[in-house]
Every structure is written in structure tokens, then in C-alpha cells.
Length: 284
Image (cartoon, rainbow, N blue to C red; front, side, top):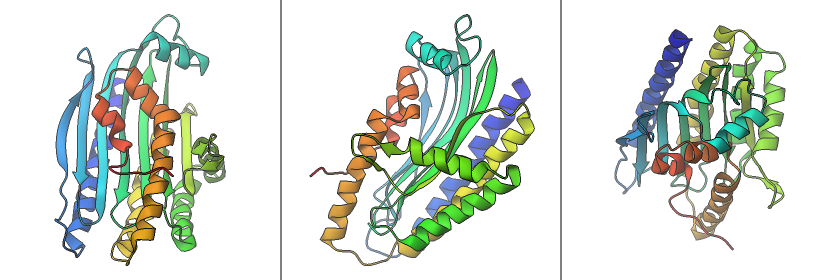
């Protein structure tokens, strides 16, 4: 499994590099008085010399008000709370050997223009001595929804999923609808996408290929929407709607998001874990 872990970590890193270049390219093409945004890259470390990663954040650009594209490769021993959570999920061997390794990419983009949708994407591989699995997904979070944007996003994901499993898109869309739901608000945080976790069919190559397909689909699914909306006129009412919607995103990530909880509980860099939070938000 050492070679498989190396390949997965390298691919997540390469995807991170590609997305950063694509987003900076979009900044280059965007007109406007704001500065052309560039990513600030900061190495991150996990407590107790357990690996780390790269935190890449662009703030105050022409297209992106804040976007983070993080890559990590971490390892160590799960804290008792995280160990118990893994055991409760049915991960074998957790009671006797709580070692783990994980690598992945995590992305959240909050846009300058309220008509351009916010977006999240992550893919990851997780290993313990008793098991391995892949997880990830992406979901669109428009503050002002356009049916054609939602349709394009979902159509692109469907095309990416179907070659790997006839039921993958339907299954993982339903999982996203359930996972990205805010119970205390009684509503979803956006218009959905796909989400999957604990993916281990017994065929590592097949599961890795599907995870790569999810990552490969992200730019075609999202970039045309951002480019089409980045110069659309907006007013103060649109901006207000954007800030209120961002409050939903913050609530979800702080209260429910599994990745946020895991990152904080396992001692990863807190700034990197909380990169997903918007730069500005408001509550009624």
C-alpha cells in the first residue's frame, strides 16, 4: 500500500497545481479596478511531526474574494475521540491500532460577484492498518441561483460518474443532498452536487480512477460558470443576499462538516482547516 499512497498523494498535489494555475488564469482574464489576484502559499504542519501540506489562499482578487486550495499528506495516531468515531463507522482494527495516513485536496471559493456561485470540492484517500478508502465530492453554492448553471454543473458530474458506475451519479447526488443539508435551518446550503465516503470496492485502481475523474471534472463543471458571471452587473441588494447566504455556509462548516471536525481533532493547522470560511458574512 506504500506505492498506492505515494501515487494518490502525488495526484492530489498535481490537481492542486492545475487548479491554482486555472484560477490565476481566470484572474488574468478578468477586467475591473481590483488587483489581479495571486495565491499566497504557506507550508502547513500537523502536530507531532505528522506530515503537513500546502495552504494556498487568494484574497481580494478580481474574480475571487477568497479562495483556498489546500493539499495535505498527514499521518499519526488518532486521538481517542477520532478513534472512537472511526470505530463507530465500522473501520476495522481501530480499537487495537489507531494509526492513520491521509492525503487529499480541499477547495472552497467565495466569489466577488454575487451572481457567480461559490463552490466546494475535495477528494482524499484515507488509510489505517485495517482498511483504506476514498472520499470526496463537490457542491455548488450560488447566492443567486441560475437554473442553467445548476444544470451544467450536474450534467458535468453525471458525465464523469457514469463510466465508473451506472448508479454512481444518482447515489452520490442523493448522498450530497443529505450531507450538505443544514438541519437547524431546514434547508440545503446550496444546489448540491455529489458526495461519497468510505469508497472501497476492493479494487483500489478502480476506486482511484473514479476519484481522479471527480477531480478532473471540477474545472469543466465550475470554471465556465465563474467566467460567465464574473462581469455581470450587481447592486447592493445582490451583495446583501450573498452575505446572508454565506452565513449558511459558515454555519454548516463549523457545526456539521466532517472534514472540519477531523482536521481540528487530529491536530492539523487550524488556519488550513478553517480556510473554507468566507471572508465576510452576515446574519439577519
